Amino acid sequence: MTRVIVVDDQALVREGIRTLLEVAGIDVVAEAEDGAQALRAIEEHAPEVVLMDLRMPRHDGIWALEQLRERGSTVPVLVLTTFDDDELVLRALRAGARGYLLKDVTIAQLARAVGVLADGGTLMSPSITDGLLRALRDGTAERKAEEPPLQALTVRETEVLRLVAEGCSNREIADVLHLAEGTVKNHLSVILQKTGSRDRISAVLRALREGLLG
Image (cartoon, rainbow, N blue to C red; front, side, top):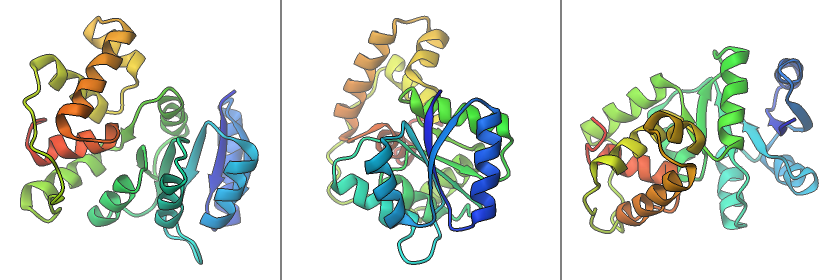
């Protein structure tokens, strides 16, 4: 069973998510009501995935994500929130979130998202991706000044990155493209190098800004 922590300031929401996830065969090992509690729970329980709301009192989700990044934590965080503000999405992704879903998802979609992140993948709901594309196309999402020049991606690398943007895990990408999973990992390593990115989400954002994914 995949071990997860649920972080939300509303007790009723936490209890509801816990119940639904446990029905889906996912083990909720702890709950937290703000970012500070989340950090303590992550250290104590070593979850495979964290479900994180963003807007919480005291220490919010962005703060928690930034703290995890500073501490070198590799635990994947799936943002689960009611807010689809483009700037908030970008802040969460740049702070290290590996996925972003709205709370109107079904339990099947949420369970799949947990599985994708646990397997090393990334995932964003289609409405979020559309909003990011609009923001990037309109120039409202600023290019980071320190970004290195982008090296051209091959056709295969672009295919791999497009599937990453769609939320596919390495295993799913391998199945779609009829490749070995190790080959997919090699492609991803090259993609990170060519895009000057620290992780998959950053590579997707860079590719979206550059118009590489359509």
